Picture (tube, rainbow, N blue to C red):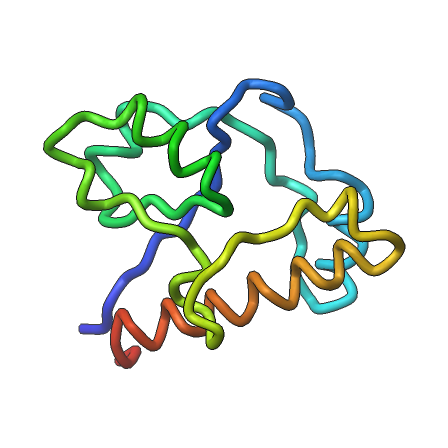
Length: 125
């Protein structure tokens, strides 16, 4: 039997709860074959800390926000997402400040880190 991976996305603030991803994010993702049309923003909950093996933050401020609400016994699960990238660390820049290519740049970084994470988790069977 093969490994099963479950991924989800949640924010550390409730700014956009219930909303779809930004249209520019959806366009960049769709151009690469990802359909984000059914995704809706939600805020991280206690369920996430207990039921996921890793909680990955896009930046240091998000990581700190997660640390503030994370139960002590689950703190070992918190990491920066780009620790899994080929560059081995850093923060995902805010695409809103990256000009016309900001969303493409962020997607490049996210894809690279996602591939690194999957390699770290082990071969799929």
